[in-house]
Length: 417
Ligand code: FEO
Image (cartoon, rainbow, N blue to C red; front, side):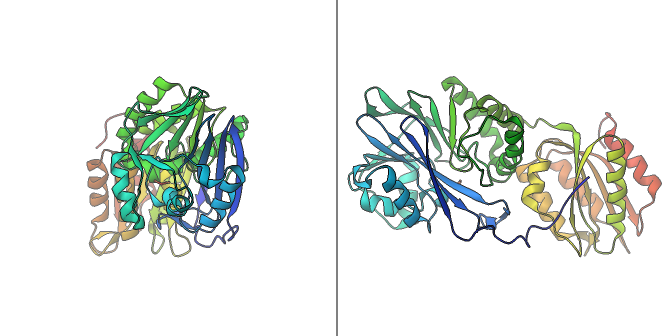
């Protein structure tokens, strides 16, 4: 059983951003800012593992292109790294795959120096960037699917429209020759990997996919139906390298990464795994879920437990990543003011929005004078597409026999409630 506790007490690994630059393919440079000071990405997601912001420079035979920038606050470091590759005044084009400020924050500083650069981006992006930064983009070229940006000598970037991964203006671009696909947020991950390109070590990549999945659930999860559509388009271009805006570039595990995205987008579940999330004010629910977790483990499942208690507070971002493709979910919460314990209600909102995939659910609840939580939790989860298989609600302590029966129902292959 894996018990996942609070991330709030993690001290930042490093308050000073680190920069790394590497040529990841011929004429393609990744500039990576490593941010280990941000504790809550989007002011929401717990990331004790840190995050990177990646930008790329492509030096073609005749033209130099910068692809995205980094978050505001890192301009100085970014410009210094950029200048180690190319004189910013020589940049011909700046591609903005996605206008969100973690990638466009340094754009105003870049455009002040790259005076002759044209900005290539989705038509929506111009207004967004100008409004975000109070700037006027003098030279802007709206891109559409299939449009090319020539770099000389047959080298070119081909644009792909990939709306809603995860903003409406998101585009990708494919560098030919080489088939390096610049994927925006897609195929990105939290954490600061030790390498800029995957090493080919299967175990290392498997470990990394935990952070890819966490990123997918929290950032892209709400738009999963658009992922399948984009993947159909991506597979026609047969990328050799996936170059995302967070994490590391993927060269040796491209098909595996695309397969993972297909699974996460389509709601493929791992019936060998269960996630338990619960709150417990005075111990009744905690005692019950611990017994349930033990029973699930005894049946051979890999069980992860996330608790909201007087001693601990679960990391919701990790929880969402794990729930995304877990076959089973156990939700435990007491009735609170004639409704559901509020932190659990928030977690259920997030699961419904970002990780609902038909998981089978067991709901367990206790109350002191009047029950309400079990019914409300079951209705909510059933309403957003999960399969509620068993509900146990009890006044005070929850009897073991009821828990055993509920676990049997959860693991049975019959229909839900
Ligand atoms: Fe990494 Fe949607 O920005």
